[in-house]
Amino acid sequence: MTQSLSEYSNALPSDTLMITAENVEKWYDNDFHVLRGVSLQVTLGEVVVIMGPSGSGKSTFIRTFNALEPYQKGNIIIDGIKLSHDLKNIETIRREVGMVFQQFNLFPHLSVLNNVTLAPIWVRHWKKEKAEAIAMQLLEKVGILEQAHKYPAQLSGGQQQRVAIARALAMQPKIMLFDEPTSALDPEMIKEVLDTMKSLAESGMTMVCVTHEVGFAREVADRVVFMDGGKIIEIAHPDQFFNNPKEERSQRFLSQIL
Ligand code: ADP
Ligand code: MG
Image 1 (cartoon, protein in one colour):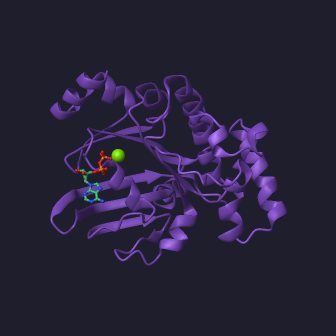
Image 2 (cartoon, rainbow, N blue to C red):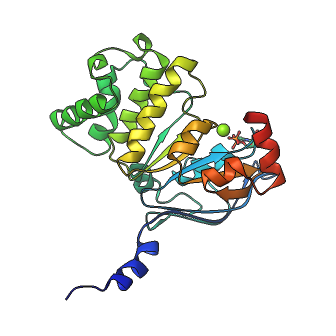
Image 3 (tube, rainbow, N blue to C red):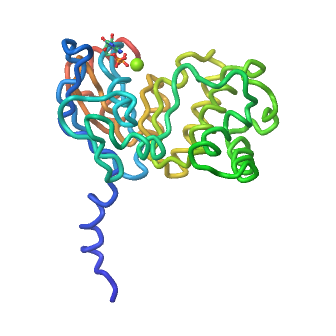
């Protein structure tokens, strides 16, 4: 029996929720209230850009999605898996959610190829040959196949960041988090990393990116989330957010970066 179209579309929203954060509250050291009731839903294939002043809680918020930060109140559900406050499901979540940081955090003593194969071999228990074959495909995808046998220190910042992206993708994550991935790069290298992220977005990856790259946000983001003081102040389509932000705090922030 064929399913009617309306039934199918009714089923879509909850079926495709990849990240649900409900009223998330977090304190650092029991007294600094860093996340003050933050709620966000991200659906399959969506690209969400998070912007906001330094110290507004952007990094802390996205780090709760892959259990790098515990939280004290609220709920976080990643692809149907509830991430308990005590981080009980940490292993499963880490496999589902890849992350790329401002500082590339590559292992300096390992070749590019071994940086990419390390986690699949140790965590996914893939055979070396399989891990290497997939790593080479990913290195080709991010445009640095010819660097596979070099060490991180021999690469430019932009190349190192693309290795970091390939390394995260090697675990076959369902969600990718980016925390200011181009902030530590020289200007001429920013584009190559943003282009890699753009093609990943076009491939259908669900992505949450903290970035102040307005061009990327305008072109690639489905929604822009603006945070300030540990709260989400505004969520809007990029056209709306950049041309006609609703909130006064968003306007003030944009007047400083545009
Ligand atoms: P953003 O990424 O928006 O710049 P962060 O999430 O890094 O903001 O930080 C939000 C606030 O939490 C800042 O005031 C920061 O100093 C503080 N903070 C971040 N990490 C810690 C930590 N490990 N311990 C205590 N305070 C922290
Ligand atoms: Mg940050």
